[in-house]
Length: 338
Figure 1: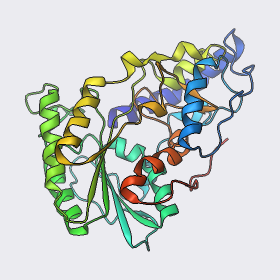
Figure 2: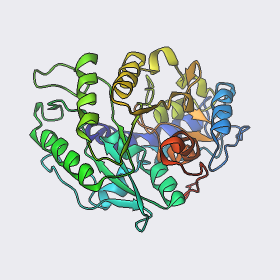
Figure 3: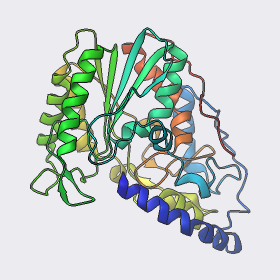
């Protein structure tokens, strides 16, 4: 996540020039067509799937693209979590209460993982508010919710705080005895084991099974939320350069979706009795586009914007309905920027 943060800072600095260049050239963002498939602020699963299916037909960047390209690199929920003391730094292995949703709720859902858990925060916060559940967010960047000894690649050294974090979060979850805990993490070959090599699929599966098995609170249902597809280009940067041909920023699903890894996650969930949810259909058909409806989907190449996550809250609520037993309707608690 720190690497993505640095990349976003650099990208934010150069994006105005890209937009200016695009406005003066044939790929004019300023002359982009209005959105022909205006996405509702919050969509049902069927509406999301329809918008995803229609996305390959979008040619020009919608004039009301959300978030604006100049803001996309900063459009992520970690800003909120960091402000609440819920984005612990490298050496820190605990956090405060980090309670969101409905703080007075009688039931609790825990969101556990690395920066991709933080990425999903807006949708979880909204659906927890709607269901009158407490949401506890336990996330630590570059520390997946997988019981492996990870390497901290920004400093190319050991990451003992991640090991301690795993112990801390397990103890805290078991003490909380939440109704639901959702584990989700970033996978792109960058979570390194101590020998400096990417973990194998077998290591990841055993580590995830260990994490799930360590949650022993009797009233807790467990969910594994799969990883997102990854673009081969930085979404906003590509869109700024291809305002009249946004399909130039599309990645085939065969490249974007980490199928072997998703099968590993699903196998770990099945082996431990957890529920598995794949978000792939919320982002891709046979291709994964950088624009869906009027949304700029990706903040970079490997993280979805806050705005699009907020849009997905209805689909996420429906997917969680079997374990939460609640209505799938959700209301946005994060105002859209335009």
